[in-house]
Length: 165
Image 1 (tube, rainbow, N blue to C red):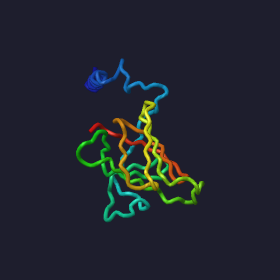
Image 2 (image 1 turned 90 degrees about the horizontal axis):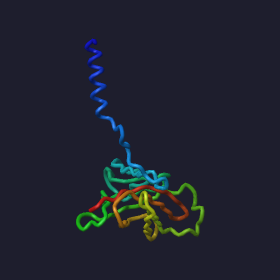
Image 3 (image 1 turned 60 degrees about the horizontal axis):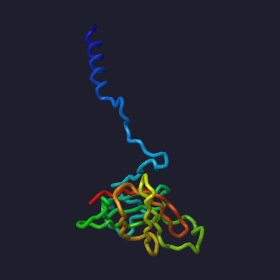
Image 4 (image 1 turned 45 degrees about the vertical axis):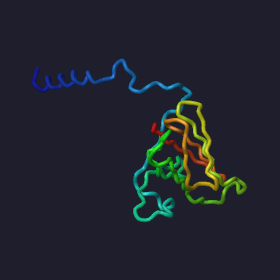
């Protein structure tokens, strides 16, 4: 066998020891469980429509809603459950300016957050009076929370991760 053949054979033997044969590469989830956490905390600049009140280079941890209608600016990053010290779970909710008037002018401005813990039926509801703005959003346990956001006849969704304190 040539030296190239021995090198190739040796590489195959070494790599075969690194496989996950006989093991699942990802944990199994119940068929009814959501497919995971899609949270993506951005570290770059806030969009122009969300940086009112900030000065200079507005680089804050933030998460965009799935439809891009709202952004959660995370002052208490990482968000934590049972935090006794340090920053609170302060979130500044900033809604993108509406392109058209609200589909329902009688809809309440209050931001209603319905949070569901990934893979469970655990739910929590929080409200931000007056609509998107500053808030403290504490949730009952650590994990990935899927948020359904409703305000002024508008909706969006996002995932936020809460870690143990």
